[in-house]
Image (cartoon, rainbow, N blue to C red; front, side, top):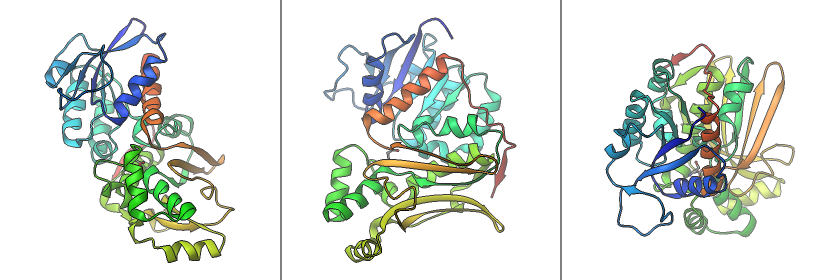
Length: 325
Ligand code: HSE
């Protein structure tokens, strides 16, 4: 891909605007936003120079567009747009963890079936470059375990409750105001959002598609002042921890609040930060940390995917893929 590429962007919310702001800082890139499809065309918004439409077909059926970037929160519509765009020979970038996690079997087929590229770094860990690291750098390694904080909102809520004795409601409200939480924050606090992200990482790390029912998740809503006090008296902090591990009984996947001590790499990961440790047989534990939610960090991951597309990068997904019931 050398000549200038035209982008059709679906969605101009928290992540869409973050991507737009990041892209503006890189005028040297051989790509620009040509059209933006939004649900409500009448809303006042930034990006006055952009062309907005509320008709998805204006993007999907436009042969002049080379790249579709899908940043909406409706997983069903997102899947339809992504599939149509790939079928029409366009390269696609998405940040829709729910859609990706729930469609991994099909996405696995799409990776093989279509000549075009589909990337989704921003779906996991906000600005942390973890999907392509696991897919590429660790592709020839046997991964034993992935453990981390994969939801910025729940980490932010627990941090504020522990540091400043905020109530759960006040902390959640603030996480929503700052653009960390989903439109439906139940997904964040119940552990489901982190389960989506874990299943995407597991697909690349283990070469297996896990059904969402194999993930057991526990909400942070049940964390009380007493739980926090008890953990503090032991020198610990409560963190929303997501783990997937090979055990003798098979793969175990959990997302739950855990009390972690200062010797744990997750202890100092506060506020909306995420951290992911990937344990491999040969090279041990690899740890990545950074901002896991928010407009600019997540938008920067979309921009990084765009740069990868422009340099003809694709996922390897090279481990033998099998489906686990
Ligand atoms: N709601 C998500 C979170 C946004 O809080 O982590 C980033 O995926």
